[in-house]
Length: 186
Image 1 (cartoon, rainbow, N blue to C red):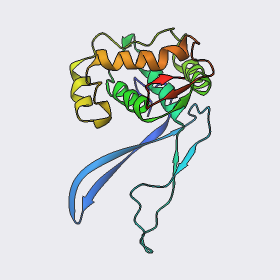
Image 2: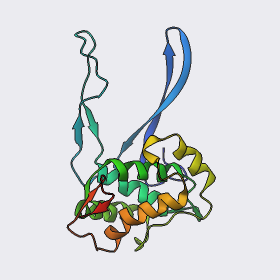
Image 3: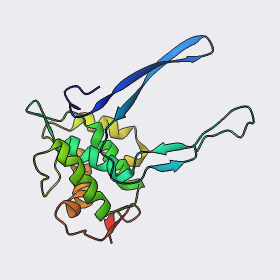
């Protein structure tokens, strides 16, 4: 693991081949990471698609805290890689999904941003921005994600992120909570 865009990360990428019956359909990657920045407790969730069959075991998932996911993606978007801006427009898609589906506290998010930026950035800016080269790829990725309805362009997504992230960066959200229903801090 690691590479150009995750030089601070230790871990291993496991690749699995996916079969249906005897026919190979695809492969998937699972990144196993150690020494991650985690500022909140992991969450435990029951799989939504768990089947209640006695011979088919299902276990709860341990989830990386939402505020740490947001901080990871914000800092990844803002960071430079070998002097170049990020090319991962999918991070903006993920941030939109998180903003429209999750409620978070500003204080916890600020703590996560401070911790993550300490590993990745010289300083946190006072405003969120995306590389100027982003655009068409984001639009294609967002078009396939129902949660991105209303935020299909980089400009629309960046505007949402400025409402979501900037008040945490500049301190104006302080003790407030983000409402994914109202798309604002209160």
